[in-house]
Image (tube, rainbow over all chains, first blue to last red; front, side):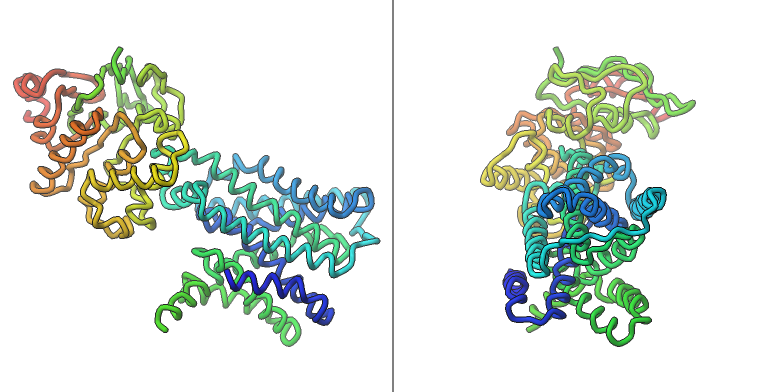
Length: 295
Length: 239
């Protein structure tokens, strides 16, 4: 709680005290918190591990690039979030019929499918990337991103402590038993899927406004999905602070690596994930909890 | 009209007739026993009633509502809940959390936090699990997990509970404790039970009426005494 509050205050204040580089880092950290926290709304609660969250980010970016210029950027972001949620609602029913490794592969495949479709559409239209002009200032974008991180964190917290969250936990533990004691399994899963898609849509839109350049292969980059999962797992999926710890730790680590050893970035990402899964299954959050109890 | 009315239910799995034109009526407040050798169709009948398996023919009516075609969660919210022969606890949740989910969703209406707590406490008391409420369900013994199955069904607020071999795997002391629990539940809560049991002694003691299935067909029906003297039942069970 205190951790989140401190981060949020720091994020809002950083334009007044920090360098442009600092603002860039905070923007990234807030972005990953928002994404990992949204992912946790579905995957940490129900155990349905999505390896395709880049699709929502990408859809958000695409919708935003198509609408900025026509609409004020706030409305474009709203539309980006709405479109990602709508897409989740449309594909959710069939996708959520499978679970375990099948769900992981299906979400990954779906994300790749959409990426290729958008790439085809764009190349058929003769554009190999779209520039946008007249974007809001870096400060405004940063505040929006910090706002999304806060919103995603509050949302994840609210879900975990609600009747909805109790139903999702039952689904994670035993779907058949959950259905038998009255939990409307299909509906709850779909709602969780939609909830986990909305903020990533807005995040994709904001990230686009920051780079002011849209290129489908980048907007739907599967590495986004991998990074989200890695951060959430490294942070720990059992608590709301887990994704925050994972995102902060990882974003800082990657800043360090990009500046010193860019070639090793993906390798270190992979090794960290393996190490955590094998030795720290409850993530940084669980580790902190253990240290807290030992002290 | 009967509380639970099963009308000519058949279920075919490929070439196997798991249930063949089974009809039965369960009255409110009774304990109805289902007997039969392995593969007789008892669990399939449970699955059809609870909505896990769609019947090939026939229909199930509960308290005036046609259940056939409804989802298991909807059927539970209408007041009919089953337990599983192979227990399915929410293993990573505590005993109390297991019951809380059932209380939150089982009744089909929104209960207040204090009502939920009361339902959970009552279910814990009913099956003597109150002292283990904070344990993870995975840490319970088999007997404890069987009782958790019953408690979870109770916490849904169901009026009719179908128990699938809750005695199997229990020792004689545990069986008599379970018998006492079920008798008490019927007395105190006015619940209706349909029970499947391999422990024939337990079934004979508990049930008001018993239906015997063999290869998906009903071969005998009556009071425990009548079933005990039934010629075909003796043949099926003892050769």
